[in-house]
Length: 168
Image (cartoon, rainbow, N blue to C red):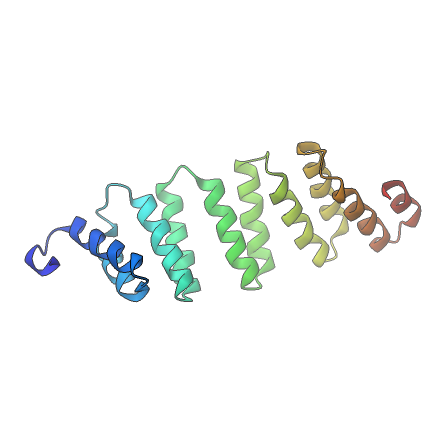
């Protein structure tokens, strides 16, 4: 069908979406990539390509398309968070933290993201930074009572047992 309309980028996008619906992700990626630059909503197409790259195990391509989406989309907080997730899964804690913190800068009311950042800092034994983000999460959502336990654990790991008792 697209050979009948070689200049029709919308046709490439439509075919790519059909392949994606049929879970033929490799062919979907071929067509979506061909038509992506000319889409009316490039942000959504870049997100879709990134999702399909994830399904096909193409981590670097997924990151590349999320970066392209960053240039096109107003939803930067979401993109930075997704990139943080990717880097965390890949074991690149520094890049994960960098992206999560950018996301938090864009959306400073995300208590769950604060908790994720705190966990990464805790794993790196940067207990002061971890505590800072746990406290931010509690400021945003005081109902997260389990975070007090995390504060106590952080204080214990820092060797501050008396302070840990305050949180238990």
